[in-house]
Length: 410
Image (cartoon, rainbow, N blue to C red; front, side, top):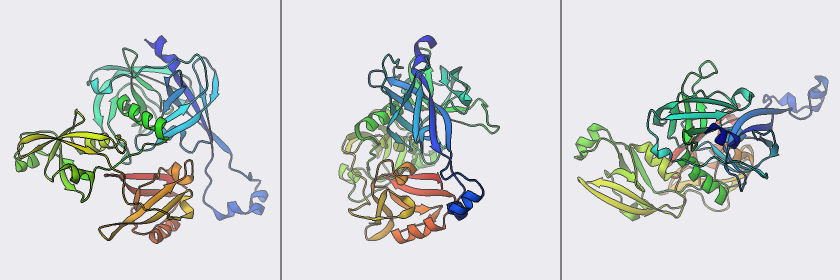
């Protein structure tokens, strides 16, 4: 099996400009010459992994955090051929990125069905830990549906005890049939190395993201217009439903696709497009990968009876036309966002691809509601909060029906 799949796992070298301390003296040419500092930041090279998933078109899946802020991406195959890769698109929410290389005689790993995984299944992790070169480790699926690892993302992680170390990010998690069931993405490593707890993005999620990146260059998330919470035993008793899993709708936005489709508060969502819903995180993950304009079938329990409601994912609201620029978030234009006549935050009208705002993770239709946990309700407040921010910048953003946290070092 390994002889078949390992040629499809590649090493990724990312060349980027190193960060400098935010000190105004560093902008003084005399100061830089006196201390023999370079005129430009020295480039840094970091290592990661990737998986060839389409040999004919040269598509390589990896992690968003592997290629973030990259000036140049170099892909090295197992037979030591090197190619400069083009970034097709990336998605910070799922930590998935898609690259394209122009090459012949490539080997791809076929996609497996990650929904079919069970705890205890044997899996193999393949990647480039610590930049050592291609490495294979084995283990089992330790848990499924893990979330809360990175609060800004759409999470449904596969947990495994196959050794995953820094540099494995973007590599393949395969089953014993040689099928891709996950993209290795994160580890819990208090000491900086493997402790038997690693995480992978399920292949079904990665494939949906890849499809949108090919079509649009980004993931175009829409809005249904519901707010949901986990179904607890107390809620189930209060609602009179004989269920142990699901998500309870606690709010239906006025004028939203959900209201037009007939959703009601206290409905309990049990499945989306045939996939079971265990809690509110499943609602977020599944709806977050359905493109704008597509229909979705949602099974709900209402008054003890099961219903299937069909809705169409709508455009994300909150951003008008025009907008103004903000120097600290170059490449984007913003406007005051309101709802029912009340200020809600700062709407993102447009974002230029590959701009500073784009690399941070902002997308058209986002609504910024806080900067470094300080509430902002207008473009003026956004500017003031950005000026007061230190080297770490955290934006709290409403995207569709969900809240994300976008982090950056300045």
